[in-house]
Length: 258
Image (cartoon, rainbow, N blue to C red; front, top):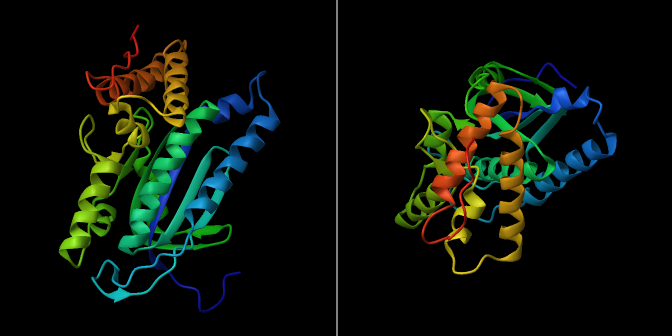
């Protein structure tokens, strides 16, 4: 409930759409059970990612140190998902990884994601959310753009805050794992972050093989869509898959483009 003491907070916010979900919901192939499985899976992903952070030197966007526990606010609304957290560097790391895990897992349910992570003023409590940050996040989710979660400069700067050489090394590693800056005009969450390292190993583990099969099936199916606009999204994703996953080290066959 909004009280007289309610106010805007500086928060990180992830806004994303499940591409094609609205059309699917009105199609003859719609299955309510599939939707419940999908959102139950989202619930579990977010629950698993919400954990106590045991660090001594947490920093907010102003560089101030304090102890903190990650407690996200979450809203689902049809094909849209919103997650917000206070604007600390640990929260930024948590939210970037949560976005990566969600994007990577939703492919198994047959959908791509597109959205943005921004940092700004926001009121978010329970099912109530408003403020400049969510407006900015929605504005970055542009129709026709690549099916990725783009990252605002302020959010990335907060992600990169570090107070020691050890922290800087951790940030460097996490940025390399989670953030991609090629093939797009803005930094974005790498959709293949969980698979690109494992794909270069001599033999694929069982979970990586399943994950790559899900991505391949989703992309190859999307490339057969009758809509040129839809095909373009999957073409972008196929090119990214081929570039990141398919190389001499991985020996994984590339996706054939029509």
